[in-house]
Image (tube, rainbow, N blue to C red):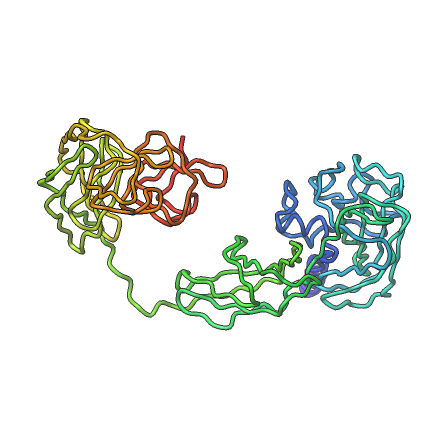
Length: 479
C-alpha cells in the first residue's frame, strides 16, 4: 500500500511539473506581455517578470477565460485594462504576416489559433469573444513543438487603425492554453503610421571567459531590415551596458558571485527584440587577499593662513595632515560651503566680492574616504576694488584680480594674461552674479557656477571642466 501511494505521488508530481513547465510567448510581432517585460508597457503587474506565463483554461472560444478577462487569462487583472491609448502598439501591414512563438518549455500541442478584432470592436472596453474573428489555425495533433514556432497568416486588408490580435496555444494533455495579445496599428490603404520593425531575438547567449571581477559574454547576432543599432545587456534584470557587436565584457564584479544575464537587440528604426534566454555565470574566486579596512581618519589640518588677498581672491595655505595610509586630498570650505578640492595644502579662492569678509576651514581625506575634523576657521577680508571694470582688450595685459566685461558679463583674471578670451580660457573667472550659462565641455567652472543643460539648471560644487551635468558628482541641481 505504501509503495503504491509513493508511486501515485511521484506520478502526480511529474504531471504537475509537466503542466507547470509549459510556457511561451509571442515574440514577433511583439506581444503586450513582452513589451511589459521590456518596459515599453508600464503598470503591467507581475507578468512583466514572466511574459510566458499567461496560462488559463483551454478550448477557446467554447471555454477558456471569461469575457473581459481574455487578455489576462482570468489570472492577471492588469492585462484586462483596455483603452485606445493604454498599450504600446506594433504597426503591421495587412496581408501575409509571420507569427513566432518563443517556448521556454515545449509541451505536446493540440492547436494554434489566431484571432483579430472585428471592424466595429470597441477599443475602450475589455475584450469579449463576440468582438473576435478567427484568422487562421494550425492543428499539431499532440506533437511536441520546437523551442521556436513560426506560422504564417493573412491579416485582413479591410480595416485599419488599432486592432487586437489574439494568439492561443492549446495544450494537448492538460486542458489549458496560453494566451498572447498583440496591440496592433494595422496599416491598409495608406492609413496608419510607419511600420515598426522588430529585430530577431539574440540566441545562444553564453559566457566565453571569467575572472574574479569580470565576465565575457557572446551571442549570435540578431537581424532586421534596417540593421542592428546595438544590443542592451541586462544583469540581474538591470540594464548594465550597450554593445554594438554581439559580445560584451561586464567589469567591476564581485569574486565568487553568480550573475544572470539576458540580451535585447535594438534595430535601426528603434524596434526592440524579445529578450534572449538568460544565462547564469559565476565569477572566479579572488586570487589576491583582501586589503585590510582603513578606518583611521587623517589628522586635522592646522596653521591655516592667507598669504595674500586681492579685491577678488584669497590665497590659502596650511600645514599638511598625516594619515596611517596617506592623505589624498583636501576639501576647502568657504562660509561653511564646499568651494574646492586640492591634493596639496594650498588653494586660491577667486571670484570673490571686494572688501568682503570670508571664513575658511579645511578637511583632509584619505583614499578610504575617512575625513578629518574641520580645521579652525580663518577669517579673511578681501581688499577694496582697485580699478573699475573695463571692456576686454585682446592686446592689453591683465594681472590677477583685474576685471573686464565681455559679451555683457563680468570676468576676473586669476593670474597674468594677454589675448586669452574670457569665455573660453581658464585664466578668467565669471564673477557676474546669478548668471546661468549654457554648459560647454571646453569651459572651466568653479564652485557655485550655474549652467543650463538639457533644460535643467545645475550648480557646480567645485572646480570642473568637461564633466557632464547630471552625470558627475561635481554638479547638483539648482534649487
